[in-house]
Image (cartoon, rainbow, N blue to C red; front, side, top):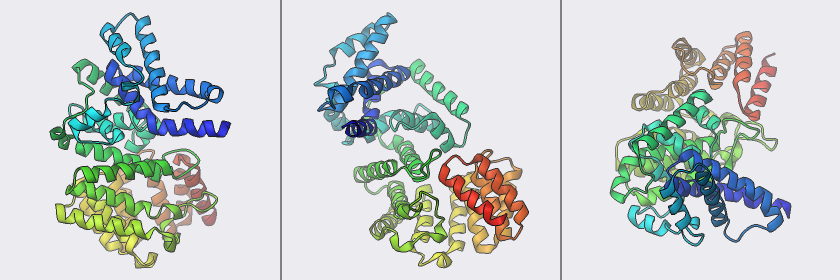
Length: 417
């Protein structure tokens, strides 16, 4: 019984967190208050549901509980009289369980609750990074640490950016409102970025015991499918969905039964999901027909090179290196350059790849990013420079945040030593 309640609370967090927070933001205009009251509502659920049973409508229960908590806070602070009236007017049969969702969907044309909230969160008055970070924190429930790692910045830096974004929303009076259909295109790039980072966190977690968070991968793909139906013919929407599917086709082979990382060259290609690969390739072809390649289409093309190679030896590394070069022109990034170093190292030899890695390090790019010394270590290992490779593996070990990656690096280090 207790296990069933715990599962119900976990499902409610995945399914309802964004809706609960968004409802309170819309009513109070206070992002911090909304998040705090949502957290308190879930804490109350942990306390009461084992005793009273799981409610028939968990979302309504959580939203009502969070709303009552917000009402108490506002009343104690003797502020927000207008907001108190709005909160008091909201009944459990209406907004508490998303009763306005149908009206919002008719305005925006977005019928999926989670996706509609992402469009709402990605207001163009905010910098792109702030929009994406707020959506990941508020709607996807990622921690500030996870978001910071995704953006390759210190956690304190990301925390300050989130605070500044919320202050700008409050000071400028930016409304938390579902945009009409004609305003969706100006927010689409930010929403795509949110989905991309949500999938990336699921496919390769930034911290914790597990390398893969399957529920995040599944949700990102689901939302990308909805977006592709909502906005047919947009090359980057197709490109992102293709990218996700081509990567997700390999997900089951990325770790073994013990949860240890399995590198691409050692994966059992017979276990890759052929249907997802076929769908990804079809979407990539549709993206190419729809328009010039953007960053997601180029990344999908790279994933397609891996997915269609009969074996590791048959991988077209020269084409992959060329695609990374084109990607670096579209979206310059030290991470893209590091990936290009790997491809160049495979196509032209480890010395050529190592030269690119050295340039990245000389510029001081990617501080604290464990894959930088890990890549250097692998290239040095292939060059037969065991002592230097061991030092680099130790450096990467000190930075790796997931248990699976640390175990992999430890195995590589042991092989050299």
